[in-house]
Amino acid sequence: MTRALAAVPDLGERSGWERLLLESVRLEFRVEVLVAAQGSPLLGSGCAVAGCTGYAYHRPWGRGTGRALCSMHGQEWRRQGSPEIDAWVASAKPPRALRPLGACAVSGCRRSAWSWGRCRAHRLRREGTSEVGDGFCRVDGCKFPTMPERSLCDTHQDRYRARNDIKPLDLETYLRLVRAERERAAGAYVLRPVSGTPRLELQYLLQHEADSGRQVNPRRFNDLVGLVAGERVPSVLSREVEEWHRVAETDSRRYAALGALLAYAHERLCELRDGAADPWAPDRWRMARLPLGTEYAHDKTRSLNFAAIRRGWLRDLLKRWARHRLQSGTMAPQGVSHALWSFKELERFCDLSNRELADAAQLSRRLLEDFLDHVARLPLAKNSQHGMLRHVKVVLDDVERHGWVRLQRDARYFRDELPSQSHALPRFIDETVMRQLESEEALARIGDETTITAVIVLMETGLRSQDALLLEADPIVVLADGSPVLRFVNHKRRREAAIPISGRLLARIRYQQQRNAQAFPNGSPWLLPAIGGRNGQGQQPYSYGTLLTRLTKWLAGLELRDAQGAPVTVTPHQFRHTLGTRMINEDIPLEVIRRMLDHYAGDPVKRRERRRRCDADFRRRGVDRRAF
Ligand SMILES: [Zn+2]
Ligand SMILES: [Zn+2]
Ligand SMILES: [Zn+2]
Image (cartoon, rainbow, N blue to C red; front, side, top):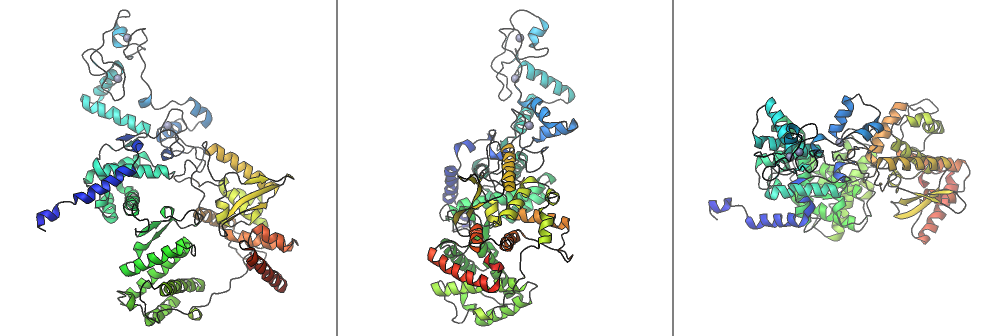
């Protein structure tokens, strides 16, 4: 191939990508300027002022309520000294740029108002007909006829004159300014600066975010469009993420924070491109995109990044292994993510000790033994060291069993050579501590209501936090005898379950439901919707990460002490152990406790066997924390 030929872009491939985009982007998104309809998740909860399509920005009701004002109305409200919000919203008007123009008050006159509610002609002479010019006012969307021998209607001509007096500008500039003001006020996503493939790519990003119920700030999006347009690339994908980060950073300050959004867009586009043929093909798997059903919906892992493994053969092998494990339902995404972490450490170890590890044949028993020593020296807890090596062992055993690649015969670990797991202390929470936690005063210090509800649910029911955070919008069933029961999905056992609850918890759940209805008028599928972020419409559930962060902060602020006065730390899972212990102390039959915590389920034969073993275990030890 000659040089000149090599420089010609591959038209066939590029049009293939463009075709895929055209197939993927729906017509409603294939526009130059997109004004999201009120109620679109793109705008979050949307501005509370009637008739305003602004992006939810200021939150005078507080974070997490889902209700907000757009930046224009928010600024106006603050400027007026933050008056009482409900009355203010009721009286607030949509932005001026979006308000319809007034028509001339003289009956039969078609012109718009110049001043005092009349067109210019009727302002000067009170009677008679008033002439109109040819055609309509040139301002975008204006339906009034022009003034005679002018290009604008009365109102717009007056506004143009007023602006021209301040700073001279030609008509075309004025028209562009009016259009920009309208678009800003409407919270529009403006794709005008880009065309062709990049435009389709950015339209796809908007559609993707709308479909997954996320907000997109129009101002940030429009800056992104400007950044992409400025680079004049044939496609967003013609640059690597790192290059885009550099562009975003070296460009003017306005674009400084756009690197992350651009990287996000790049990733979604790569998924579309690579995932169209095979969702397992990309080096980064987004769990939501994999054909796994809802089995792992509760798992905290959102994505698995195989790109972190630099050796191609190892990356491919791990992808094959992970796919097998996930599809057979024998390992959750979080487990796979831990395995990736282990192999990243293995690669780091090879780099440190100058081992090539260029193919499977170089993975020797000697190397594994040295890695074992390396892990033992890492500043990790014994259990983490054990976990790290165990994952390597699991992968190697699977590879061996399925014969995916040829490994050296002795390239494996034996169970008894891994560092032993330490036996943790009992994990239930001391009664002295529980009493401090359960007090109304302590709960109030959590701050936001959704987290308070989550904590009460965890403490009273002993649900696993993943199950509690995924409770549906109305999880209460009232039995024939009038007692309330909480319905939930036991994600670990993959079955539905129910437990009786107290009147206090019932009241709390009803209160939470009222708050949800206020915050999300269209309804949220969750009892505990995510707080703030891009969840204006309540489509995202509360995340485990947020719960952990807030709980940690809360507990640190409480300065909890046990009966001996020593500082204590608590994790959400401990509420589960604690409830079990408490019930045992209250002489509730073990069978009932077990059913309440829904621990043993599945195959009835196995269940009976487990029950027998467990009862024997209980009898032998008195209380055994591991039953929960
Ligand atoms: Zn507004
Ligand atoms: Zn008139
Ligand atoms: Zn006009």
